[in-house]
Image 1 (tube, rainbow, N blue to C red):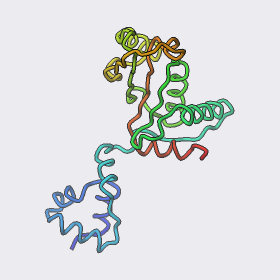
Image 2 (image 1 turned 135 degrees about the vertical axis):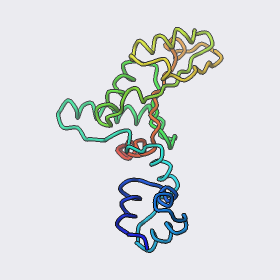
Image 3 (image 1 turned 180 degrees about the vertical axis):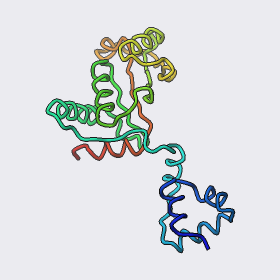
Image 4 (image 1 turned 180 degrees about the horizontal axis):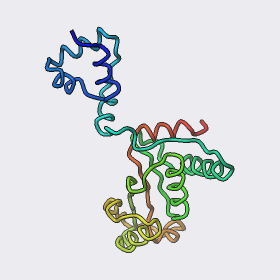
Length: 194
């Protein structure tokens, strides 16, 4: 017989997988599954198990609400930026793209302040027209945001078409800031007024 308290500690508190528990206790996987059910211990879904495996030390973010008038202003700005410019269709990450470095900086400040996201954990995508030098655009964004080159994916070059107003304003490309975490994305989307 397996001790239910020990089993619960291994599975719920320590975040061990069923197979890891079987290896620790020296029994089969089926035995662990049996005792989890018998002990009334709810099991993780596959997505929860994958998330836990990828984040063994807990969430790579921690959310908090604003506490000062200045923070309330930044919080409202961040939500508004994501509501207007963010990609809500992507189910697995927070994504916001724009051509304005100040807008991107403010959104990063929002993520750092209220989600405690380490800026080095952010990834970026850059899209430029074919008549723009991708290296110059990369250098521009790296300098503007004080980020590392390896945080930016290989630029996507779009063939220049009819020169319009948008194209004239866009000499450094569209930069998309990304934080790949479904839990953080769902939390942010849940804060939006719908």
